[in-house]
Image 1: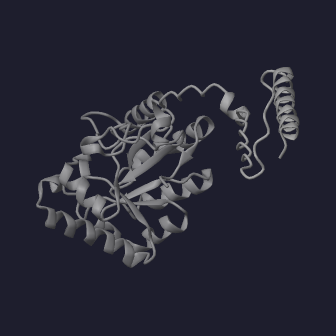
Image 2: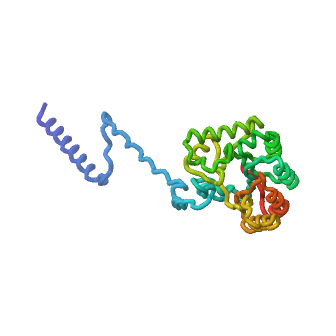
Image 3: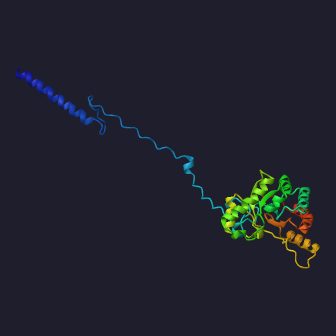
Length: 283
């Protein structure tokens, strides 16, 4: 190549380099430079937006519930227990339960049943086993009239609570069997110790036989005939005691066995109590 041609080519190269530098100098600072085609840049991962908090999450937490105290805590309107060895003194509702012990009695029980029927009142009869065995027709009539049955031991032993467990169980089962012979499908859900002489052992045995032990809240002592007290005075005392001390939920103790004055007193008491209270048989 001639010197002249080399000189021309060198001049062209110098001019080209100068133009490239001027173009680079005139470009805007920070302008992105395209990546080479052979190595394309990957697109950045999209940033997920945080979800807006739900309405429930923005609510203030509810204040803690106050603990339930008193009758509502047990689900009962009135306390059941209160008698010896945890026996029941109350019905557990506003209803009053009239309970009659020691029968059935062939002279007085039919009179009482007739009065209760006339007044549309249901009661609870605590039956002595040997009396139930002797007068099964009266047991059947008690059940037929819709009254509740209660085991009151075989022969009204006041010391049964001190007997060994096996002997207690035999006595209570013997009494239940006498009742069931009269009414095979009878429900015997309650037990009452003679004299209210409950002991933990006695209550435990009754419970194992599926019977709840009932005491009383009101005892008018209709069984207690004081020396020199006339029948009229006795009836007046029983009536006055029950009228004064009866209140909703009470279990009232009375006797239909060999207590004609009690039957006479209830001729006055039944209408009086019906007007003021709900009278119920223990369920």
